[in-house]
Length: 271
Image (cartoon, rainbow, N blue to C red; front, top):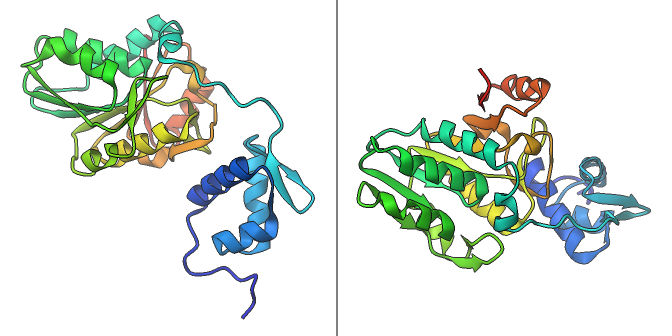
């Protein structure tokens, strides 16, 4: 049997490349032959994956393998820092998102400054009753508290990430695997036509992926600065997203490119 032949258990390319990038980042240098053996794929496929990761500016190709790109890693901004950025745009996005929710529905509400705006807009809608909100954000849960008992607020539990006041695995997963909400509002750091929805940190990207699959209508909320960006943590392709809500600072070409994939785009503040 040819050792270079691919096995029947090959991962989907998007998942494989994500794991490949994580492995390279962790080890510092990985050989093509090691990646071939680890992922059960040919050297040709490994090189194709590395080319894709290099185009995403995640790794650098070197003789015989790859290393992490030799630039300072992107710093994850804190929740408080994010609140100060594009606050008016996020308020418009929050209002547009909250307008999609109806009495009696269940909602998954991700962590983040944009989803905080969604939470505030939901609370402001005095017409809403019997809404159940499941969130992994401590700040989000506290923001929703004034709406109790009109709202039932469920916190996932899990390990606390102080930078975002978010709850991640372990323990967050079991809750999300037991629910299927009417609608989910998911934050992110990047929305790209080819690379899909991505996030700067991996623990939260995993929770966002679970939310994406645990709702009838996954909605990505992303201010215009996030469009066209790509980050390490893959959340999902645009084909898994129902709607993207952004603000009127978004370039028309970027909005139309997303719409061309079949995803609904709501531009908050644009008539």
